[in-house]
Image (cartoon, one colour):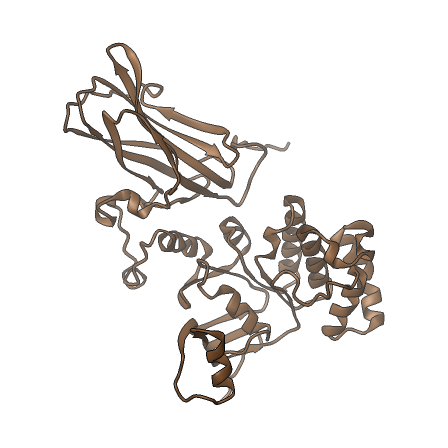
Length: 426
């Protein structure tokens, strides 16, 4: 029996399950389709398992999760691209969807021809598309390329046109799947301004993104999927915090019931670096008279993670084992951008820390704690232990680009660092 759908509900997902059959070889699929064998030569893969949620009209909801968690699958079922194996989806409102790059476009047609093709598929007359054409072309802003076949477009031009079509056909529900990551930063800003307009107009937005900053800034709620299961639905910040645990394999379903936190990193893992997304191709050198044997990045809750919120306190921690006596060790870390430019860093000498010498067989744990004012983006962390032996500067152990650092921000300024300016108008 169909469930009653309230007037203020835009999308209802009820106990949705999607199963894919994974065949050992293509001939097995053919044999089964033709009924030539009774033996089942496939494995079942659950892309979604009994997922339910409801989105109210006017809400902006984000779906996050690791690759393969079922994010795109659920959007395709909602938009009718895929059929569920079980469960049902009910939608109240005209949907405009921007899913996989190229979906709904004919590569041989020009941009303008594809605008009319998409508009017709969405149920608009030629006259209605005529009325919207100027707005679509202005938003896409790709010049005379609109008169060229879209197969000649760059991915950035393509997503500009596709998004311009999706948002200018007066959708009541807009669904976007990660496509904005293809456009340049200025186009992304234009799209997010359009999101804000839609929110003010009371339209519903559902989007998948790996940009956690956008999730926290624009979404009213967030849904976290993991391996086909819905493991959380609630505030964007809570969803992002839990997602950070999923990324480093620290998610414990019992936490959802107890809401407990593991603040002591010794309880999280015997080896800190096991919980960090480390670089398998890192560069290391030094004589290893003092060796960095363990390391971690910790957020303001004491959780080991590679993903941090801008403006929060975080720590870089390392453990060093001494193979011989070192009287003046220096411990250091640096942060570089992906182009290899050193953005910032420090060491115990700069910080005038009271560092004591260590004898062979001893250990030293070092923690650098500071506020994260880096702009949102991707960075690389390097660690080092150096010092002086017989008056000569010596590198004992350096780990270059040992792990990544993702900074999530809902407000970036110019350059690498935020000056945390305060604005006064009088």
